[in-house]
Amino acid sequence: MSVVIHEVSHGFLAEYFGDNTARNAGRLTLNPLPHLDLFGSIFLPIILVLSHSPFLLGWAKPVPYNPNNLSNKKWGTIAVAGAGVLANFSTAIIFGIIIRFTSHSALPDGFYFITSVIVIINLALGIFNLIPIPPLDGSKILFSFLPQSASSFIFAYEQYSLIILLVFIVSLSPYLSPVLGFLFHFLTGLAF
Image (cartoon, rainbow, N blue to C red):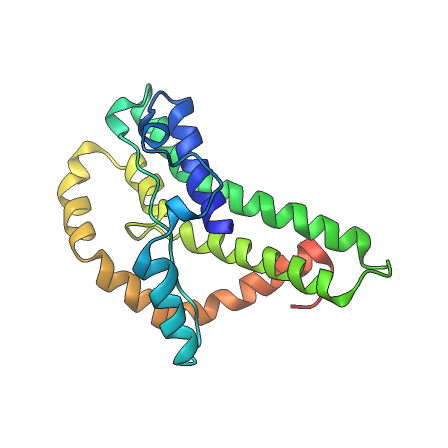
């Protein structure tokens, strides 16, 4: 559901800036079924779990939008890209506050397990999507600030983005764990 909220947020901001592509495609819904990607939502996560991978990766179908329909192409693109990240961080903050203010209550352990997982997943999604490697949202934000003369760099960067992203995930993702742990503790008051 965190990925669905992330994607729907992109669509709502695109619509706010004048693009109805997501609505016309029936993708402005919290129903997870229209957002499922057969490989990214089902097969890849199952393969990673069964192979005891040190990391779990998956995705939903991106919500479609047409940047040419945005009333302000630069700021609209930045807002649409940032909407998913902001939705994930907002969800993490809300559930982190719930944990912090109920931690002295007699609620069942299952409640804290589920809410902690929600906080961790949303923090991880928010941080990961800020990485400026295509197709992640951070790249759309970065590219919006680059001058038109950087178009050849952007094109070359996008061509090799899958390789760069895979190298990043394999080699640098362990370094994100301390950041994730710090933010989790900051929001919830609990140890990671």
